[in-house]
Amino acid sequence: MMELSYQSMKIAHQAREADELRTDMRKKNLLILIYHHLLDHGYVAAAVALDQETSGGVKRFEVGDNIDLEMVLMEYESYHYVKFQKYPKLTRRTADAGERRHVRSGGIKRSPGSAVKPLPKISQSASPHSRAKRTANIVHANENGTSAAPESSEFGLNVSPIKNGPAGEAAMNRKMTDGKGTIHDGVRGTGIDTDHMERLLKPLSGFSGMSGEMRELAAIISRDIYLHSPNIRWEDIIGLEDAKRLVKEAVVYPIKYPQLFTGILSPWKGLLLYGPPGTGKTLLAKAVATECKTTFFNISASSIVSKWRGDSEKLVRVLFELARYHAPSTIFLDELESVMSQRGSGTGGEHEGSRRMKTELLVQMDGLAKSEDLVFVLAASNLPWELDHAMLRRLEKRILVSLPSSPARQAMTCHWLPPLSSTGGVELRTALDYETLAKEMEGYSGSDIRLVCKEAAMRPVRKIFNALESHQDADTEMPAIQLETVTTADFLEVIAHTKPSARNLIDRYTAWEREYESV
Ligand code: ADP
Image: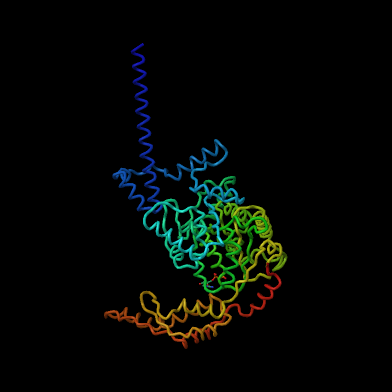
């Protein structure tokens, strides 16, 4: 009896030891996987730090064939799905209780990963002076390293005067952390990080409910069609103040302050940017995506039709599903008239595939209008009068992006050809009368002006090509390159040789605006 129990104790002890060993191995393997995951994704500093913290214990190991951290997670997701018919919630955004409460009471369904911060309270009673002072106090307290952060309602009080008082301005410009989040964000109450960082995209493995073919299309869209961050800021767009304001109102604010945009104010789901080519419609769409950190799906409508003839209808369906999956998203449909021209118009009968695709696009747009997903369709068209009326009805908000005004033309020329710039390390000087040039370029679009500037800058460069070419044959030392200054006369000569691309259509845009302008 004694003998038996001694044996079983020994076995139990060995099993425990084996278990502990396995646990140790698992922990070690996990660190090795993390190390390689970090390296593979470019987080080199973090990988090095991990290696140092483990005294070089992870660098010496490789991961096995066909194994990586993402795959392990995918396997787990599949296992979970098979077992519970849903994907596991692996992570959750950290948020304080106030935020969570707000999300619930806001009544808007938010996609995961897009936390809503409470709107700042704006007190009418506090004087600008006292409020600015309070902001300054917060700065001071944190500069001294005290960890006590004011309550979020305090942030609220500080919001509106920040623009007015210098102390407030200072607070806005300084970015500080209080250990939980940035005070800067708290003060602004936006919940959207102003630093330019790419949004983490969810892996497609979680994109469920699709056949193999649809999954393939999803992979194609993900690879070819979306840009993670187009990196265009509002200030990169010259002029177009009205269009910028309207776009912000229609798309940006509903994403920033969803709690305000409910009921009658529920956000527009479809917005049409129309106007002459090269005026900044694409730039506006990209700025929305950059500034709101939405996933940006950039679709050239003509390429949907030409590349995807047979499959374009399915492609549209998958596109919208993907956009919902990665919400908040912006779908940018460029050259809309090439797919959504009025039915029956154009040469001959309509291609059956293209008609099915149009219908699918309309159905998807209706789906968006009924849902609370933060997915916006921004369409652009140079020929709005050719658009299908059913589509127009779904693009409720229409914004004319017109040719640049005279001050905008002046600012553009100065932006692309400042008095002193450098090209390939060589100084380029200009002596330009910007006002005269702007007057001469009436009717030119932004992209026309850019072309003229490029051509004007090319002139002095062209002149030195000969010198450079002949130098290559000689064995002498390279002469210092000095480019001739670009003068107003040079520039005017270039203007004389370039014609604006859309001047004669302007009346048509304004007439269309009068007829179809939305609220
Ligand atoms: P479209 O209206 O046809 O979509 P884009 O937005 O693609 O035109 O503009 C084409 C190019 O012209 C831009 O990449 C940019 O270089 C220039 N451009 C046009 N309008 C502006 C503008 N308002 N501010 C700055 N650049 C502009």
